[in-house]
Each structure stands twice: as structure tokens, then as C-alpha cells.
Length: 324
View 1 (cartoon, rainbow, N blue to C red):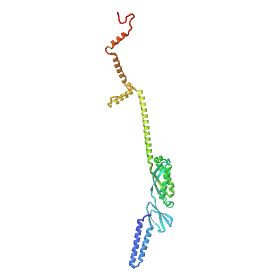
View 2 (view 1 turned 90 degrees about the vertical axis):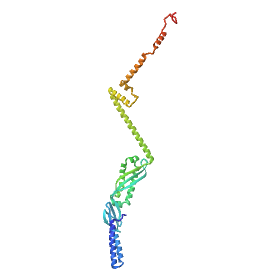
View 3 (view 1 turned 90 degrees about the horizontal axis):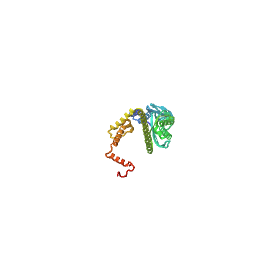
View 4 (view 1 turned 45 degrees about the vertical axis):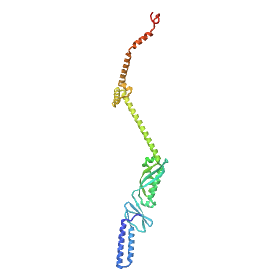
């Protein structure tokens, strides 16, 4: 029920004041009790006139019934009705209205219980149908939204609800619009605010996401290694027909290893061969070995000559142990 407006209060006060003044003047002039009847009549007239004047705001429509029958829509602005004969049944707000609704413990298509919260934006475009065709259009819209949400959840997978909310919003809007259109209501949009899933399933999904990220990281690492190997292969083909470039690269490798104050550098033997370092080292080692063999220790030659003389065969007829 709408509260009395300022215009009604002003009309009532003015008319009642006039009636009281007239009754007081009559009482002072005649001194008869008829002035009391005049005051009561002024009070009734003031109430009647105040009830007849109605004011609707810019966003409101008033549904007026004449002895229970629909008379029409009035407003916005000032309009009048006949008290006791005509009544304002509904004050309908034509602005956009927001209604929040939920679906608790509803099973998805893959049997996962979820709690979903959503918001509905709607407005009344036909106040006559909203007032005459449904008892409480606000409650009707709320219940229609809840049943539509449960229906959509039951036909959707959990992954679709988490990733494709825009699609679910459009589907909800279509279903609710079909049901509420006959009540003179237009659904502007539906937004799913939150989808709550059990804690156990959250942990499982977190582990799945972590495993997926690790898989992607390994794939990326393997692809990087493949690309590096391809680049090495291209570089090898470049060095194959360019010994000078390979020699410079080998020198750079040694420089990079030695500039960090390293005392030991391990490089492939082929690198030393390309820089002629391996051949030089081999020649030096061979010369040292040969030099050691050409300079026997003192007395080593005399001993060997004596052994050869002992092993040599003696002439025939020579007595053993020397000449007689």
C-alpha cells in the first residue's frame, strides 16, 4: 500500500481547516450544536477529497479497478479516482529490477553437486498483463528463474559451467524470457555470479591443473631442445666446409673456459686436432720417450754384450772351460 503523498495531506489540511473555521463561526454566531455536525461534515469531505487525489511517480503505473473491474492505467502524474467505488489495485514499477536467485546442491550432467548464484535483470513492459494475469509477478519471476537455473545446470557439464558462463547466461535468459513474456515482463540479462563446487573436487581439479601445467612445461622444454638441436645441426653443416670457422670456434671455446680462472679445461680431442694442439702434444711426448730410450743407463751396454758372448755357440773341438 502506497503512503499518502504530500498533495493529499495538503488538500486534507486545507479542507479540514476551512470546515473547522466554518463550524466555529456558526457556533459563535448561533450557539447551536449544529456546528458540530458541520465540523464532522468538513472532516468527511476533506478525507474524501484527499483520497480522490492520487499521484504516480515518473516510473510508476497505477492499475485502477472500478467496483472490481479493470478500468485502466493511470500515471505518471496526478489523477483522480472515486473513493469507495474505485481503488488503486497495484502500483507497478516500470524500472529495471534486479532479482538474485540460487540453486543449491544441484547435480550437473556429469553428476557433480554444485551451488550456483545468479542475478536477473528484468522490467515490466505491460503493466496490465502483469497485474491481471499473475497474482504476484515478482514472486513468479523469481521462481521461474530458479527452475530455469536448475534445468540448465542439469543439462550442462561442470567444465562447461566453469568455462562457458556466457553461453549459460544466454540460455537462462532465453528460458526465463519465454516463461515471463506472457506476464508482460521483459528479461534484459542474466549473469551467473558464482559456481561453488565441493572442496574435495576443488583439490582434485587443482592437482589436474598442476599436472597439465607440468605436461605443457615438458612439451615446451622438449620442443626447445629440438630447436636447439636443429640449430646445432645447421652450425655443424656450416663448419663442415669451413675449417677456419671451426678453428676460430674452438679457440673461442678455450678462451671462454680459461677466462673464468679455470685451472682445468676438458675439451674433445677432435677440437685439439683441428687446432693442431693434439699433434704438437703427441710429438713432444714421443720425442721425450725416444730420447729416454737412446740414453741407456751406465753399464747397461756392457752387461748385454757379456750375455750375448755367453749365448754364442763355441767352435767344435774346443774344450769346455777354456784353453788348456
